Length: 240
Image 1 (cartoon, rainbow, N blue to C red):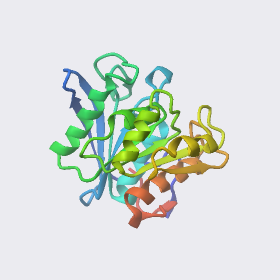
Image 2 (spheres, rainbow, N blue to C red):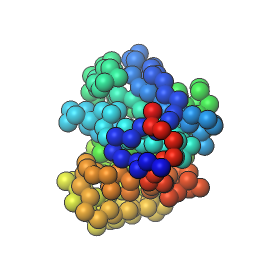
Image 3 (cartoon, rainbow, N blue to C red):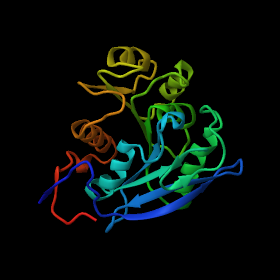
Image 4 (cartoon, one colour):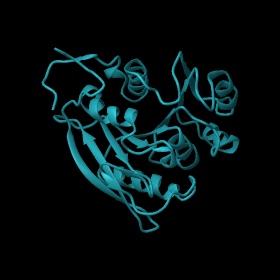
C-alpha cells in the first residue's frame, strides 16, 4: 500500500477534449474517467480567476482529476475558460469578467449531455464559484459545490435564484479566507435556505497543504458520491 500524496496520479482514462461555445470559440480541456467502470457522477470544474493565474490545472482541480475517478468513480471534466492558458493549451477568446463565460459553462454542460456523462455537478473555485452561481442553474445540473466563494460578481440575486430553485448548494469557506469568511458566509448564503456552509478551520483561500486538499475532496465526495466517503489515504496499485 502506498500513501496518496500531493503528486499522486491514480489510474484513469484521460483524454484531451475541445469544447465549442455558441459564440464560436474552442476551449481546451481534459476529461478523466474511471479506468474500469462507468462513472457514477460528473464534476464540471470551473477554475479560479485567470487574470490571477487560475486555470484548469489549479491544484485542487488537478488533484480531483488525479484521484477521484479511481477513488470515487467520478468523471472529472476540467477546461480553460476563454482566454486562459495551461499546459493543455490556450482557449480561444478573451477574459470576459465572468459575463461571456456563461457560454463556456453552457458548452461544458452540453458536452456532458452529448457524451452521456451522468449527474453533472458544478465544482467552482473562487472565480469559478461566481460562474456556477450566475450561470449554473441549467436543467442538467444536479447541484454546485463552491470552494472559497468571494460573492463579488455573484450576489444576492443569484443566491435568491438558487434558493427558489432548491437544488443542492454547498460552500466550503476557509477560516482565513481573503474575501469571505465563515460567519459572513452563513449570513450571505441564508438567502438560499438549502445551502450548506462548511467552515474549514485554519484553511486559506488557496487551500495549500495536503490536509486541506483531502478535506475538500472528501466533502465533494460526501455530497456527490457518498458511498465512496471517506476517501482512502492509501492506494494498493502502482501509480500511473
